[in-house]
Length: 214
Image (tube, rainbow, N blue to C red; front, side):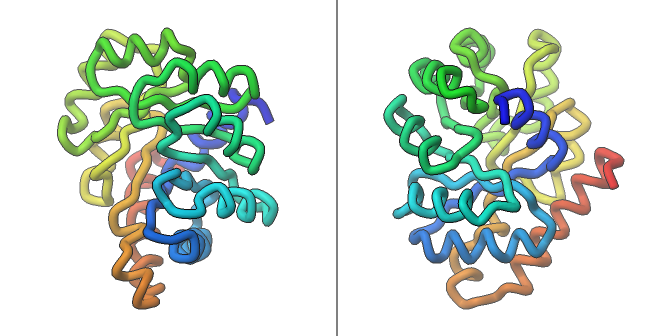
């Protein structure tokens, strides 16, 4: 799968759950439940203990597009891609990450917030720009960025939920990243699968209603 094909799949999925938990076991449980809720892709953050092993296991299982998040070095890119990640996400502009992704033909989503950072991410070779943290600037910020960067694929992450996802869709984003209730540590620890399923389905339904996707 090429980087372009991966981006196309992320756009088709629409919502990318950002998996960040205190253990690989809890993160794996969250992924399993969210798959039942209808999700087909997952960003496993490197801040989760045992993240690389989890990426390897999920990639080997198949049936979902697995990416790695909070990737900050070229060495980390090579490690997660070897484990099976098909896209790499960074919270900031790290040119060596984009270069390593390009060398390995995996998609790169690079974090930015300001026009200068967006330009730096695109110049570095990012396939899409992750606006993070999106909740601090809102959808109007992304709409303004799109007016000067009309060809850039924007992916807001941070604070996205069923109540505000429509405003981000209206701003012209290509997909969204979401954590929060989808991977709520307390809910996962106590085994409240129904609450995770409900939150997951609510966000997917809201996104699909906003985009008109079935």
